[in-house]
Image (cartoon, rainbow, N blue to C red; front, side, top):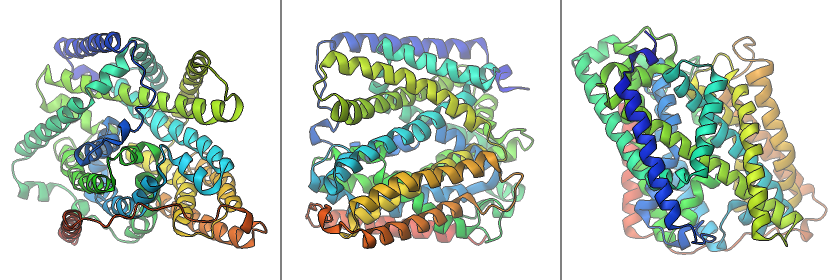
Length: 527
């Protein structure tokens, strides 16, 4: 029986009521702040403390799309996908001790601005375009793709209609103040998702019966974080070498992830907030991946593993609660899509249109160009999402990670060398951002669409491809910097560092996190 057939009239009524309430809240909020200017709230006036930073980073990372994808990969391969959650602590630590002190020391609002101070206006401009591309692909299109799958499963409609419907709802909410409402209730929605995931896990565990029965009914390697080097899905070599490229980009250089650290009250709060994020990442496996493993035991004959989470919801939860879960998922997806569209519009309008083409633009012109860019971004996202939907041979989680794996290398190289090596030159950085991005995305297009690995088996694992691209671009930036005839003319000096020793409390917490993570890797291997 299809998922949409498992939903009752009560479930659809709950979805409708939930969205109507959010819309009403949004209208009320928008009326209250109608005449309020919010021009300088990007970094919350540098007032964020460690709990806000940790919850914001974690919430941005583990939205509904990743929840659905994590259950899918748990269903097909077990706990190995936990590496994308637990291995991340190393790169969150790198953010805390290497990147955050430099970002805060430079007193910047955006990462393109940081690199603009390091290398100059041309690098800032290129990075602004790079940010637009990554927002379009990683935050907007991938979220639309996961949301399209969700709407498709609920309403039993084609993917393209689901995508357009989701975008239409998002635009409606934005125009009516719904974005403000959803942003206002985001923390509540995340907490509700966590509670529901706990309920799902507990109910599913009771359905299975016992831990020994779980051990008997799943493949033995489902509890291994590291698999053999010849494993077809996730060989340990690919994870150890390939994930760091993605980890550096995602946790240390992506504007959406780093933004809350940029808004920290001080470096102490930034480092504690990053540490809190590392602890929260431990929850990803029990809350999002293990339900997929339990689904494999309870419903082993699913035609599409991407339906694992929704199957658990529809089969194990009572009517009404099913609808509430779906309402929260849809509302959170709408929030992410609206935020991505707004971020896209803001970066283009402020960092490109105003800064480069029309610095004298008045408020009305800025608003107008922002709306045009929002519409164009939405249309572009539809086509990119449909292209992602055409990828064959990968499940939802692998689609997410492979796409991100081809975006990551240029940014990871430029930021690592730009921050750590004073000899890196502007020309070298610009060349890697332009030609390195073209190379990485070109290889990604070949891998995912032109010569898909499902048909052409000569490809290495996508994580290894990401690693190879990183190595090529790293060699490139070194060679280009050393050969640059104008090295003395470039801003080849490192930016100021917020030189505040890490407090004892932070050292203890980071040390404890290292011990816990190493212990988890020891426990979940060798089964």
